[in-house]
Image (cartoon, rainbow over all chains, first blue to last red; front, side):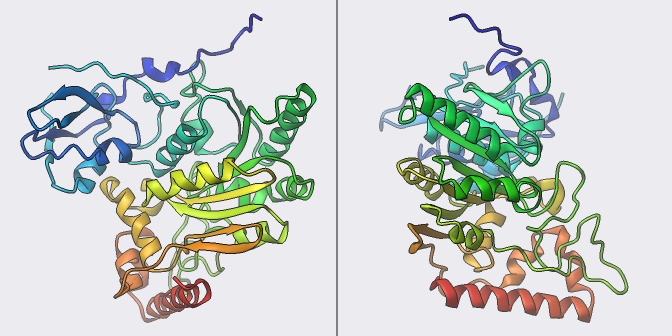
Length: 90
Length: 297
């Protein structure tokens, strides 16, 4: 059955909201314990495991900076405080 | 180095919600647990305005925008159509809206649907005022809060009215599942959605979501404020199954004072400047103690 959709599902992806940001999250991979809290608390859902593993088998988390609005929740909630918010120079 | 984002959530980024929005965070987790076999009826509010700017949509599931008052009635229609097709058990029907749509405008139609005992999960994203239209007070606004329709001044300390006890209204309609949650504890929120969708009958879930421009909080405090609302006892996190209290989130001992929760929010700033305001703070503390006693938090 063919359905004519008014809009494509998930099409807000075109709208890159990264330029709303003042502060930019920087992850210190040395301190990261790969708990996944940042992925859970991100309102955009733009934090994800990047699939790279180090010796202890930890998976790093990375942010898609095309969509990150720089709210800083991940930095506040990180249990080991390995995310720093720094002013982004454009 | 630029990584490629997998986009495996059912709400895509790129929507126009504020930085640090609690509502979109709660929506993402509710939808993630509900899964792809879900139909959503969305009442007017921030949840609709931010995600569906024409010609775009953030959702990857069937989604329909209803008016302010009739999200639950639209969901009733969807539920009836599914019943006719014999697909009732395969598809989750969710209606959701903000607190204005739930506590005030949509209450009549929600009440009707609950009376018919329809198999719909209603999710209320409670940010305690009409945030989308510019912070007007609603039935969910707590005592003492500063909104544009209840501004504090020489003879006023913000909103005079108590918050409506919506879970009690839902219980009076014999809902099979009534629960409250906050974005401060996301794992708890996910478990509650899972439990609600496993039951048949009318279900009500109320989620306290932080509103950064409406509560005048810092965007990084979204989770912290919601967590303090639970820990101070002002927002009881409770769960009723078939009308019986089956769970309540305990407060830590010693319990943080209510001031800790109020001071993070600009909407309560005026309460700390006058003697009248201090009385309101004491009244809010009394409400918190009362909740602790009533639900055994």
